Length: 301
Image 1 (cartoon, rainbow, N blue to C red):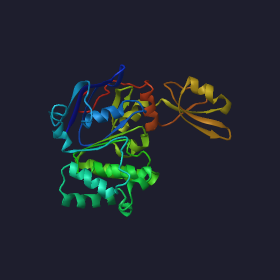
Image 2: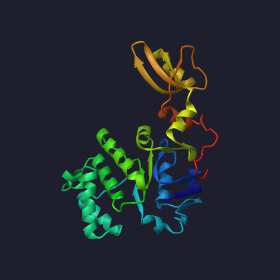
Image 3: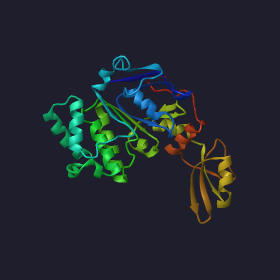
Image 4: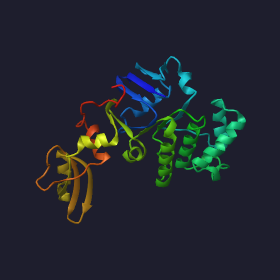
């Protein structure tokens, strides 16, 4: 199982380039696609899910061009878009039964699969309630269930934890980790902790460009020795932020303890600290860290 993305660009009317010459290869496991809002993640996900076509470039699934032959991928695809709509008067089983029929599942196998998935996403007790009575997080879990109906080989989930409470978010992370054993999972999000918990492979997109890809350990090594903590007077914090890349600021009785990303000591009192993935992500997104070899280990660069 392999998804190859070659020089993919997506342009919209008005000269807006959402995705710019992306090259990468995705195999089994979880790929965490990180990027700020507006980075082009959803546009790229829609291309991979055959919802829209690239302006230029090529995407293949097991060497089959998915623009020329989209059904080859659609048969094995599960897709949760960023904005998953529901019919408010239907129950979850009714909506999932309809979607299962669209995907070509028999009524008998669909009933069994729907029962399993409602348990997996913790909605079995709410199966008789109309979707209009569901919370935003519950509707998102219905979206996750529909993406899994056909037991997909390629699962694409775009901002799947939106609206989920902490317990539901943890449940989803565990589910995605379990699913990745024998399929390709692409998790697109702007939440670093979601990716950190499940992905052994991370790609960072900013301004439509693939800025960095690698294991979490590789990203942490990029920024090691460049993360500092310094105590700043609260009245001086705004000016300090204007001069330095601050990833976190915590108020204390003695002032504000700022976490700073900089190649050199940002202040005489600054002390070096071990980086975390948020530091590495911010370093890349802000355009500072684009080390050589930003492509895919063992794959297309």
